[in-house]
Length: 394
Image 1 (cartoon, rainbow, N blue to C red):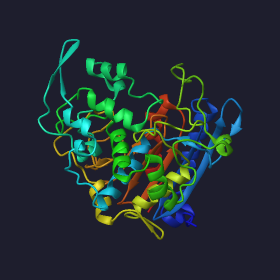
Image 2 (cartoon, rainbow, N blue to C red; image 1 turned 180 degrees about the horizontal axis):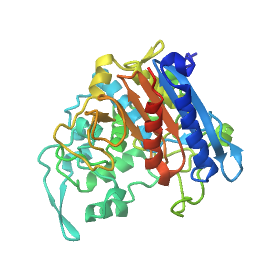
Image 3 (cartoon, rainbow, N blue to C red; image 1 turned 90 degrees about the vertical axis):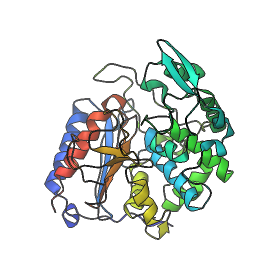
């Protein structure tokens, strides 16, 4: 039986109760005004949870109150978990970060780079292979079909690389046949790289991605409500969005997590609760260990959460000023510049439906916010961070 995360009063871990009350008031106000259906927020410091609250409704169509045990679609917060899985295999000696991905998925040995001219593209050879490090830090040259309007993005859409009726192996073969948007190692491009890493885990382990994650990460950490779908007995706990975005009026359609997943997307397919994800963050905060369970070595966590980009830059909407990217996480490199607070060395990421997390090793703090409000996600990521740091008292 895994140990629960310790609970503390805010003032015992250097958090201001008044500041946290302001956070609660802000989220309650946004719920009352109909901007978001509901939320769950958790803040921990020095390894102890000092704030764990739910707000609003879990399912706006049923007027059901949000519970702290609500299950959310994590989308890209899946990436951090899969990146840890890859580094566990690295610690097992099963791969080197400089290995070309084609060593494990041979179709990538023939992947070409697109050369765009007007509404068309030609092909040229890659200057060097895509490495596993490239996939972890998003310098592979792969992209997401929704991150641009070039003919290469259109080719991704035409190939339907996001379809649910495929295996992880099917998608990896499809991606390898498409042109890269950039030469490997030259540009930070948010992409389906972590989906490919999910397939890498399968090839090396001989297991499905879901089974590997369950055996090596989820079960050892006590993440009992996490996976790639929600079993029937727990589906009443699924957090749902508004059918239409209240600010933009757009229809909201999220991943169907009631069906068993065929495509276990390493880049965006998982579900979980706020407490489950806090247990994962507690492991990272503990330098690879949660309680008596160790998943990674201390130096491995330090390596993953260091900047791996150097002079390589990325788009400001995803990599704000003063940030680089490590092996699965955005990493803060400067105390200033970014339009939100944090310490040098803190690391974070979020999900498309509104979930977000960060770990601040300097302040010994980690936090997670769960929403199912895709159009509001940027606002709440910053608001939550601002107000949590404003509540740091000692």
